[in-house]
Each structure stands twice: as structure tokens, then as C-alpha cells.
Image (cartoon, rainbow, N blue to C red):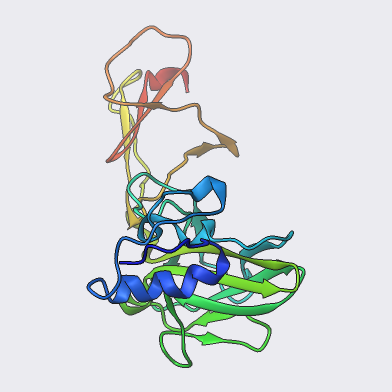
Length: 239
């Protein structure tokens, strides 16, 4: 156990990764500075909080041209890393562009461990990260660390594999059994994360109600109720 004063800044990132990989070697390391981290155990501090002095801004951007199907999700309570998630369809490539001001020495880590050539991706001379043929092996927490004369900082994203949205059962033309009958347009979609569906009538998005449809004869306009199995149109005589 270390008892000396320990400064928890960007220089502690590698040491934190070493402790996570060798939990029985070093333990109980607590920060003496900066003030915001004082007395906190280094092992429990998120890597993005280990910054050096100086104004260094870092961000990770998806290359939309090379990775058109990838998209971002905001931090979720179910995500233990508490950072935003990048979802990539299985088998697609992901190209992440590093943005830093000022520019400096750039390196990437996965799960706290520095990436090496051909580990699970390729780091370009510009400091960008390329993950080819996304699969389970490429999933994980990726962190971009930039060090410059002004200091250093880091930014993390969680990368996961998703399934492309797909329409399993498509809506078909239907006819009312009688005027005023309720109609259901059957539609089943799948994907990971769960896709968000919208219904459009004559180019205008419908004002949908989510839930269980119920009869309401005599209204002056049709009601649209969306369920997991499709779209229910109530009082179609007015449609």
C-alpha cells in the first residue's frame, strides 16, 4: 500500500491501468491532490477525471463518411462506464476521429490498457482509431488521451455492436369490414438498440397514442394507437 502524497492527474492514468490489471500488487492508493479528488481512492476514479493543468479540450467524433451506420446514445444508468455509447452494426467498420486543442501526443486505451498495433484496431498517424469488422471482441470502453505542452486530458466512449433495424412484417393494404370499423396495420420491426418507429399519413407524421386500443365510435376524427404489433386506426369512417 502507498502512503506517500499522490497527485491524481493525467500522469496517473497508466498507474491506474496497472492497478486494474494487477489488483493484488498495489492497493489503497488515495489522492492528495487536486482538491476535488482528495482522499478518493485512485482505483475508483474515472479516467476522464485524471487531468493535468492547462486548457486542453478533447473530443471523439464519428467519421460519418466512413461509418455512416454508426450512431451515438447518451449516457445511460445501465452503462457502468456512465459515458455515451457508440453503436455499430455487426461487421461494419468504425472510424473515430480525435479532436484536441491544442494538438499533442495522442494515444488510445481500451479498458484502461494502452492499445498496441493490431490489438483490436489501428491508430493512424493522425491519432484516429479504426475498428474493422465490428464484433464482440471490439466492444468495450475506449479512451482518447492527449498530452501537450499545456497539459493533458482524456475522453471516453463505450463502443458496442448493434443489429441493423429491420422490418420483419411489413404493413399491407386492408379494407374495412363496414363503415366505422377499426383497422389494424400489422408491422413488426427488430434491431438493437430497439428501433423507434413513426407512422406517416399523406406525408404528415401521425399524432400517436401509445397503449391499448379501445373503441370510441362517434368521434369526429380517427384516433391512431400504436402498439408493439402495429398501428390501430379507430373510427376509420372519418379518415
